[in-house]
Amino acid sequence: MKVHPTHISKVKGVLNARLLRDITSYIEDARSRAAVSVNEILTLRNWLIGDRIQKEFLKKRRAEYGEQIVATLSQQLTEAYGSGFTRDSLFRMIQFAKHFHQKDIVVTLSRQLSWSHFVELVALEDNLKREFYTELCRGERWSVRTLRQKMDGLLYERTGISRKPASLAKKELALLRTDMKMSPDLVFRDPYFLDFLGLKNSYSEKDLETAILHDIENFILEFGKDFAFVARQKRITIDHVDYYIDLLFYHRGMKRLVAIDIKLGKFQAADKGQMELYLRWLDRYERRIGEKNPLGLILCADKSDEHIQLLQLERSGIRVAQYLTVLPPKKILMQKLHDAIHMAQERYNYRQLPKGINIVNGNKQS
Image (cartoon, rainbow, N blue to C red; front, side, top):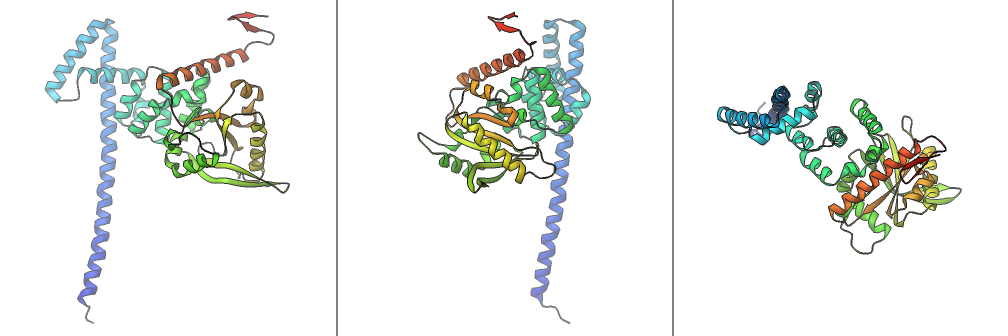
């Protein structure tokens, strides 16, 4: 039987396409694994250099000696190996070994984070803040650019964990590191930055919802990658009365549904009852086996901290957060966040006092 030349040509084309596709995948896979291996080796090398120099510092305990030895080493290493061993680079390696002092942890992290990630992280002086960004960067697989954006956007200062005592915050970060358990204080922020929506002057709740859905990628980036969109204007019916949940998400890390209610004005006490109704309905009719109780997030243009404290919203699984469609100057925002953190930590310390003891002008009184 004679095979037509056109048929042979088509078969060759299919074979060539498959062959090329398979070989390309092998090459790309090898490149990817090689890049990971190179990063692991580079990161560990930098840690070993920093650790060794740091031990030399401890022998002499003199700052001028440290400066002298780093300058000499930089010159010698640059002459022998070229770029990558400047004075600043060596001091960065020393900081790396100082802040990440356990070699086994460095080995583990180097499989997930690049040296460029570590360069950003070692610049943070606050240990808790550094640990926070390290764990979230690793868990959510942020790029270096995303890590910089999160740090520049004051993510740590906007999460509930920054408002807790260091001992409790460390416990939550340890659970994230060992069991990948995300607590609500690691997930929710206050305030939320919605400036990317481009909303100006007056707008309605519907406008805000629509803008969020049109730019869902940036919305998820601000809220966290574990959020998955479920529904908009989710209708629920209770005693033949229809209610509508503005936005419904599912958080994979927490294994919870998250109902979001958007308010254009200031948070009102009545908003609590409405959200409680949504959460009880979701818990009864939507929660699946293996999932935890749904949580609620009320996004509002403004809020009263005293209202929120007195209503004890967190006991009902409700969070209230302000959203900003136009960001204030960073200096002003940082001051507001630091004030909020200080006040939250003071409230926690006050709650730990024995009953009958009050604080007056900084002094304990019975």
